[in-house]
Length: 91
Image (tube, rainbow, N blue to C red; front, side, top):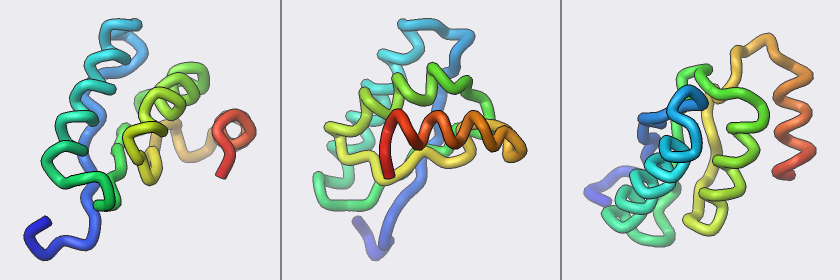
């Protein structure tokens, strides 16, 4: 991937975009994955814009596409939310 060790791409849609936005996020990530191949570390930066249920749904939907991690999907002080997502998604 042109000398880069990994890449982080933006999460273009959030909870306000509903199920359609979730599907568009998955399709967007799928396209990014196709560009870099199956073994290239690819992360999604969410700009603290997700909810716990949305982060869980998105993480589950992206897992088969080789998502390395979701970055900043909740506000940094939402410790309980991060713990809930970790319990739901593992890792």
